[in-house]
Length: 232
Image (cartoon, helix red, strand yellow):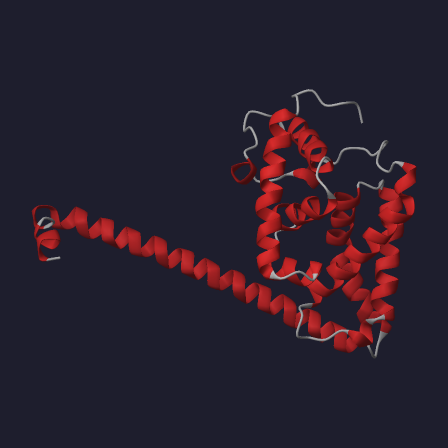
């Protein structure tokens, strides 16, 4: 250790500046992580308060609907490939189911995970009911639904947004539902392992396994997918 510090004596100013820069960078990351955690905690606390109020006042439940209708609709569209009108019908059913079961909600699970769980179950039920219809053949592409991190799944940076979105959607559709959904929850919905575990009711270790296998399958299918995408 002494030898290391002695080697810095010839350029004390630059060495000091480098150390300070590293420490500041680490401090900034810690502060950012703390800020994210506080934001998540604040959001969960607000949800819990709204749920408690909604049990007494229907207007408070409408606030929960307003808070979650946009993200849940995106989730439904991503996982099911339903058209927007059918997805809206599923969303309405989700909120009816949520209201009907609101007394059963327990605050040991974040409300977000709980309502995503209800959405998951409702979508799976819908997929089973309409499987014979060949859902999604005429669905219009919404690029914002398929902006997936390229560094995580080996997607070419050279593709434009629309071309990339087409290929991401096509590749996801090739995967069995359990793998498709876990990739969507992690990389498109931004959930951590614990939240995914709550939503899917699977242990975190199982979630990790599904993610690893899903990423491998995605990369394999992505490489096999040609740059041309069939008409929507």
